[in-house]
Length: 369
Image (cartoon, rainbow, N blue to C red):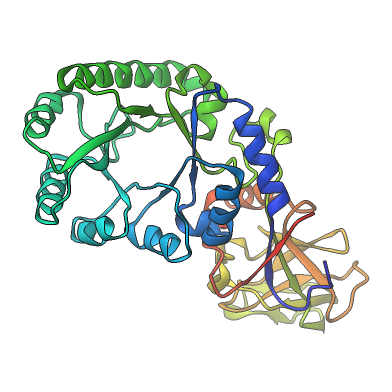
């Protein structure tokens, strides 16, 4: 890669392919793979990632909202797209763009049947979500008969899949809870499928679910964070390569005297002579104010440089007193040298939060290496 001259998020498609193949190696021959590309593909670039995964042979995509699915269709993505949390007012657009809804309540199911019928649809593919313990979205076990009565007379839709979501798949201390979820989902699926004489696809596992509960991969798995190079299972992390590296540059260097303050609210006051560098990245780019005042750090020429003072909207300051560097030099915010987990652990956060927080104004640069 050429020298970095501005703040960029570098996206490594070779790493994406390696992560995909590792996850695929865990699947049974007939298990399908759904790639989760919601939230700009976990803060990277949804279109770039979806196009690459489509070439790699992914069977399905999932997004959170209809607008995300529309963006993929506009970019030429042909693979089926499951919308995990469609809003009722967007059902018509969803159908127009051949997206497939997750229907998780009687209200959503009734409304979609109505809209699909009004648009003269027949056997439009839908996915029913069941709540087995996450208590976020989903039908409950006791609603099966209500669903059956609705679907026996509805011709505008067809059930493509039944699915649920594990609440703590990465935590083996919660293994019994996860196994109870799997057992309940199996029971619900069998009951509904029998009563409707259907054979829909079943899916429940996310990345951690696939790795910890391979017996529950059913007909398809939904992998998100693993594709982007992260595992919530510590011993599995060596099998994944993070695809994103956030880089920036030194805009200006300051020599600070003892007693001087740095940044807004004078939150940092130097007790000795130090050298600082200002970087063109701030909380509007996704670097939370929580990383300020020594909690976070970046890497300059392989050396750790703490963030000092409050993170500003468009800039932050680091201490470089013992680092030999100059204005224009490259800085790694996170990447191979500076693990994103180390950063997020410092403020009691998770990798998902920082990844998905990276602003769309940060330039994306695609690479293969």
